[in-house]
Every structure is written in structure tokens, then in C-alpha cells.
Amino acid sequence: MLYDTVVITGASSGFGEAFARHVAEQVNDRSALHLVLVARSVDKLQALALELQEQYQCRVQVCPCDLADSAARSQLIAQLEKLCGQRMLLINNAGLGDYGEFCSSEPERNRRMIEVNMTASVELTRAMLPSMLQAKSAHIINIASLAADLAIPDFAMYAASKAFVASFTEALRIELKGTGVHATAVCPGPVHTNFGDVARRTGKSKKEVPFRKWFYTTIPCVVEAALKAVDCNQPRCYPSCKIRLAGLFVRNAPLWLLRLIMSSRPRKAVPAE
Ligand SMILES: NC(=O)c1ccc[n+]([C@@H]2O[C@H](COP(=O)([O-])OP(=O)(O)OC[C@H]3O[C@@H](n4cnc5c(N)ncnc54)[C@H](OP(=O)(O)O)[C@@H]3O)[C@@H](O)[C@H]2O)c1
Image (tube, rainbow, N blue to C red; front, side, top):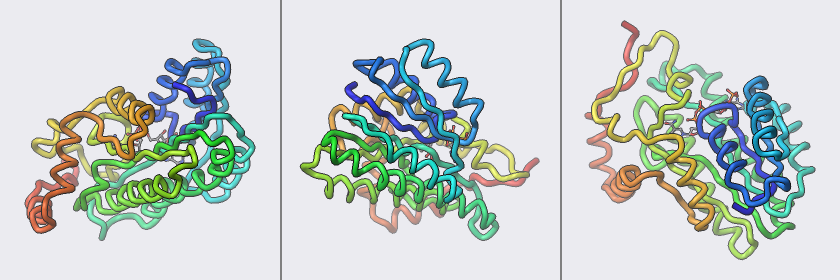
């Protein structure tokens, strides 16, 4: 891996933490690596930074930031605009979901989802693009989801936010053609991370939707597939064969069939026992 400046949002857990470890381990020149870790959990970021610095002797910068807060984002952007690597990799990974009907959703939580899943990725990308274009060599990974291709009842806002991420990435990639800057949308299926616990509403219990287990992949599978997609400069990445297959089906099925399937699907949000 050739990158020297790597910014990862949502680096305190799940995919983001795994991206940080993987990049530090796989990068060609560790002494030139500058990792920038963004999330709210300062303690977790600092522990990870210490571990990576000791193990790999790379430079790790911790940038605590609530990406749902526009003033905090502006401060982060001021820091990111000073970065000037030869080969930059921006991984817009931070995100959250909300399981449940839209009519009973909390407006504040919806706002945070919009800000973190969409606005932050757009603003960070816009802020880092000038340096990336100047260096003529950079890559942007936007973590979307298999949900980007499918309207999902009880997950309406989240799926719509990921559709935005995928669409934005596709258009951006075309605009950037010939500049040396590339963009990839990564569309994982379900994976066991903190995501499910964060998405579950207070008072709602865990319920597995039948057949959903079959779709599960692992954190390493997602991270390795995403970084391979960067190496091969692919526009989109569906980690694992089954998710690729599911994506293919969803993108090619008629809307009436998808509506029928989604209307008869067991609901995930159930009252606590
Ligand atoms: N797990 C899945 O099944 C799955 C499937 C498809 C796509 N995805 C996507 O993958 C991405 C990573 O999720 P994950 O599965 O790794 O979940 P996770 O373990 O819950 O990680 C989410 C990360 O986002 C950060 N984050 C959340 N809100 C934030 C905020 N307001 N400001 C700054 N950082 C914030 C969290 O850090 P702090 O809490 O420390 O701020 C954490 O580091 C998300 O975009 C998610 O939508 C997940």
C-alpha cells in the first residue's frame, strides 16, 4: 500500500479501527505514514494511537470530533486542510443507524444521522480535495452499505443516507477522472460491530430477522475488500461473494418485486420483552 497520509473517521471501533490497524500493518513505508484518527471517543483513539505508534513506529494523530456538530467539523477541517501528503487516503467511515419506524423516530437522532452519514463526508471530502488534486494521487473511500441499493422499512433514514453516499461517490469519481484522485463506494452487508447496539432504540430488544444471519460477513473481510478495491481502483466494492450477489439481485430486480419483498419481510424493531 502506497499511501502516506491516511485520514479515517469513526476510527474508535468497528471498521474504522480495523482500517487503522490494517493500513499501519500493510503500508510500504511506515516511517512516512501519518495516520489521522477521528471519532468522539478520545480514550479509545489515544489507546489505538499509542498501540500503533509502538508497534509500527508510524505517526498517529488523534483528532477528537463530534461529526454531528458543525462547529466541531469546522475545527477538524481547519486541521485537515493543513495536511499535505504526496498520496492521501481519506476513509469516510463514521456512521450510525436507527432501527424503527420513521413516525416514532427522534428528530435529533435523525439530524445526527444526516450530519454524520452525509454532511461530514461531503465537507471532509471538499476540504481535502484541493491538496489531493495538487498531489495528483489520492483515493477517497466512502463507506456506504448494501442498504444504499434498497429502501428498507424500519431503516428508512439510514438506507436513504447510504443511497446518498453511493450516488455522491459515483458522480465524484466521474468528475475526478484524469486527475489522479479516485473514489470508491464500499457497500458492506451486515457485520457484527457496535453498529447494531447504537442503532437499537431504547426499550427495544434484539431480534434476528430470519435468514439475516446468512448475510453476515466479518470486519476483516470488509476492510481487506475495501483496500483491495482501492489497489484495483474499483468504483464500488461489495465485500464477499454473497453480498456481491445480493447487490446484483437488488440492483436488477424490478421495483414492484422489491416492494413486495420488503413489505412481507419480518420487522426488525420489536418491543422489549
Ligand atoms: N456493521 C454493519 O453491519 C455495517 C454494514 C454496512 C455499513 N456499515 C457502515 O460502516 C460504518 C462503520 O460502522 P461500524 O459497523 O464499524 O460501526 P461502529 O462500530 O458503531 O463504528 C462507528 C464509528 O463511527 C463513529 N461515530 C459515530 N457517531 C459519530 C459522531 N457523531 N462523530 C464522530 N464519530 C462518530 C464512532 O465513534 P465514536 O462513538 O467514538 O464517536 C465509531 O468509531 C458506518 O458508516 C456504517 O453505516 C456498517
